[in-house]
Length: 413
Image 1 (tube, rainbow, N blue to C red):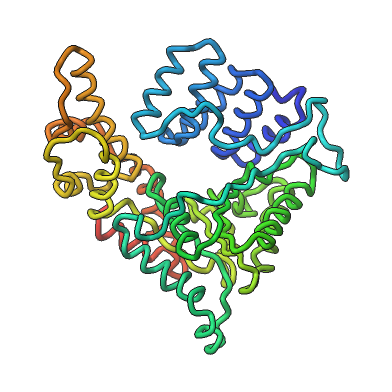
Image 2 (tube, rainbow, N blue to C red):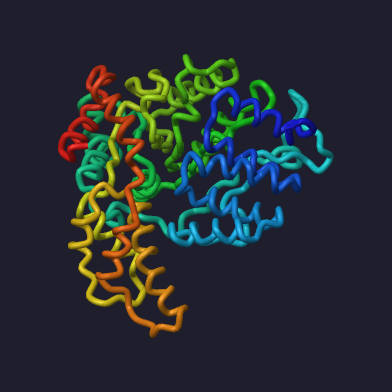
């Protein structure tokens, strides 16, 4: 096993065994690549893709690992999928490996100074030059309205809320099927309040030494306080804040406890706003959803008709096209996620490219090409809907999933 001689891999493997998660698979693969073990890395990236076949970062990593392992055909297959999903293979990794040891091969001893030569945790995201706001999010008006009323309005007019004795505390939890724009909405929320956007995932805080993960999480929140206004985005909250009853080791429970402490320590003057996203809200510890923490929960469903038209129109922008009726296409793509719609557009384009490569004349993409693509592309949200339906029907204590129930009934899902 690759982790036999590397302490970071041992820690990551132990965490994966305790609580399997896609982010940990990626972190293990990244570490194997850093150690020059591309075959082991490829196995971890392939496992991540088995969980989420549309994960652009996993596809990119798998392509690089396959190249390094001497498997050019497999690498080419991953790159074709990446292109079809609307991604591009950059020359450098799309995110820094958050856990890296010094070249000595030794880990930082407990209690020692985890300086930059020993441990690199989180590369702060640069100030957004491409900051977006709600105007850049097509459709989803009900979602934007709920976020505006429950989260943004108190920030715009704090005096009014203070006059009524309403504290401006608590975070916003976005949930819904994968590939439907939760991160995009979170970025737009940051843009609406003119704040920095800092994304934090499990691999950004995980450490092999007891107590260090909690310390890293505290440092990230402290940095956000110093550099505010900042929107902290906790991606895949079910990994970082998993139900403590499901965690078999104290380390995982302690990390959840630390997150609770950080949320309780935020006040209205800190300039730190917390937004989280998860595909599985039922796996998030109940304490995180109590008042003053993530007490505002918003469903981000698959894109509605205006959003689908917006996504298709934007993704076809700059490409040769002939009389594409995006409203008609939007009506034919109900239940497709945003990632599915990108895949649909790329599939239509690929059909035209294939003709040109076979010696045909270059021509614009037309409605007939999209009709052929529609016969190939299927919705990827089916498994999520099956699980979500069970929770909406049988585990809707206190109306936690009323919004989800309404969406399922409206769409006969």
